[in-house]
Image (cartoon, rainbow, N blue to C red):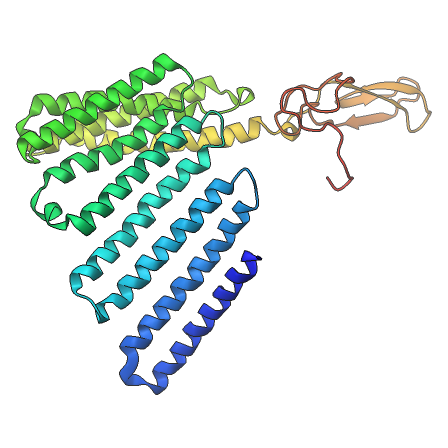
Length: 386
């Protein structure tokens, strides 16, 4: 079965329905309410079929097949719940409409994070982080849906449910970033601080009924442990690169900038939680300024690594043996300006680096290899176009 054609047909039919409904409003002014729902449904079907095309393309690849299948299921569930919320008000109570709308938002938000986790599973270094992120958010999604549909009254009456689930949901992302590290001890320390911070936050929220300012000691523990855990996760993110893309000085500077930004932000949170009459202006300016500098540093690292990994941005330093175009004397030419010692012809030679096109590994003198020993990229190109 050609799923691409099916998705394309759904897309075209949906757009046609939207166009017909738009014309119908001109001739059926009293049916705007129904026609409007048809238009929204058709637009949603067009968006769903368009995203399904991308998911189907991923299914065709063995590497991304789990991601494609998961995306198809998520698109179907979001589409069904959204369309049901649009039309259910004609048949059911407002409570059902609200539940369907919230379910659609939950599926879309949590589902996007779950797809991120599944996308990382095929990466050796990110596999653990991806699995943890996908499974944890899938579990939380199921819990939220069960509460909405079967225990909705508890969500309105028991704020303790929010005090438990919301911190866990946020800290799970932090733990996933900590799992990027290959070092078991480093990973264990980061997870331990995350658990302590999350547990202390939940405990203080439950004990103070959400007024965490009534437990300053616990709040201080939460901020300090969260700072350490976030710095470990951020360092994992900064140092996630190939060996040839290492930029130690830039990485350290970016981490220091992030540390100052987080510390000053923690000060702002402390002042706000303790109900200070006025938060020190220096803390606000420090958190904003160093937050911008941290973002700039992260983008600089990304750009710098791309430049460093591009072998075509480096000049070669080897020799090229070639006859002189004027007198045919054999010459050993180096990159830059040189002269033929026989006839004096001025020659300017510019050579790219002899590094691998993919990883910049030095291939000088690699006569016994057909592929790069580092990453497996073929040395010879297949066509002149390549």
